[in-house]
View 1 (spheres, each protein chain N blue to C red):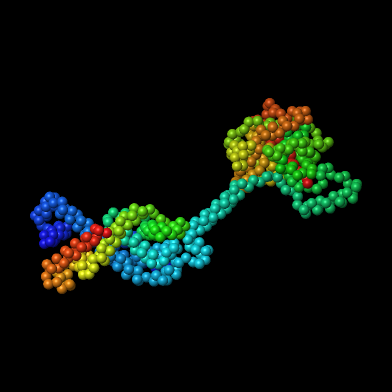
View 2 (cartoon, helix red, strand yellow):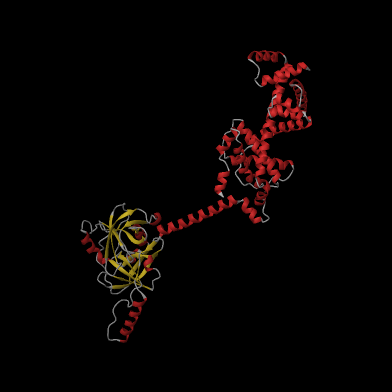
Length: 188
Length: 368
């Protein structure tokens, strides 16, 4: 049991280096390694496995951004950090759903992560704005924008993909799309 | 429209760092002069950041979803969901707390155990009176006494018939038969006899008991007793220093035995200031024996020893014997016991000293 655990859960150092190097394997192992801990916490505090998945993914995003942000200092074990972030997020969700938040069953040590979580919430707001703006944009604009700005396709490739006769047409189309998206994004 | 598109393209290239140095300078100039363009740059920058972040998070989520799909969430849910039993839940939720409590309890048990063990080792304090009789000899004696009482022509031997149950040592305080010993020697006694070096027994009664200092004063009430010669020693009123050479005469067996040692501490058992600790070999039967220094002063009364520590015997300081003496009416003491001016033992060799004092040291025999 303990052998299996130690082989599947990467060390904290491996995780940090792996994320910095965009290693998929490190992220996978990190994700699989600590999910049971969070699942246990959520299940025992009025949540189900879907809640656990949402909360856990948010926590991983917080960790990911923090590491990518470059100002990450490992002041505690990653496990403790992830647990604390999940706990914070889940408590917030519980109080938003006006469920009782006293009498929380804890399974791990907890450290203060309020600042990180609040910073993440701001970012998350932008993320959701962008998400709903893209949804409202409609096709084919959404795909064009995603391909160009997110998937980093060249104008030439987009041109071929959407069957535009020349890149200028594509550019004009992209420009229009972008203008609409910006409008949507800054409106919301 | 056309112009806007171009500006947009330039802004994009500017933020993407794709402009040449000249174009860049030109554009920065334009941006400085035209707040509308500047605003567009800032807004575009913000938008691009958001878009980029959106992309990153989306791909991260995708990746996490893949990882999530690899897990058997169902089994985990079954493993971790709150157990219907309160007890199991309590154990799961408070595992660490229970562990801490248990280890604390263990530690406490261990501490208490080792503490008790320790105090037992340091603390056993054996009073040095001698248990003399056993049942067998008692019965033998009984048979003998029956025979003697039948045979009336044989004169009964003087003194008690059956052997004493307990024994100790005592020493004369006055010439007219006051004897000092430990209270624990004569405690619970029906009758007490003393026997001197020549083998003569005298009946005594206990005239003074001091349970605080464990001192008893006996008075010989036997008609056969003749007053002693002058006492060869005196009771020291002051404390002696550590390292003082001392000796004691006592009756751990039926004949007097000399013990030689030194004062090893100014306080006795567990820091008892009424006692000295003496490094001296003593045995059951030594209780009540006088502890003398080289100048023939009695500095204490042997009381006890610690049974697991080598050479730790305890003696009550002579000061308390003097206090006990003060409690007895002075006129009944007869010739003053009192500190004689000149000490006849001073300067004598040890053998001579013992010779002089041995007539004043008694074996105490206790019957009950």
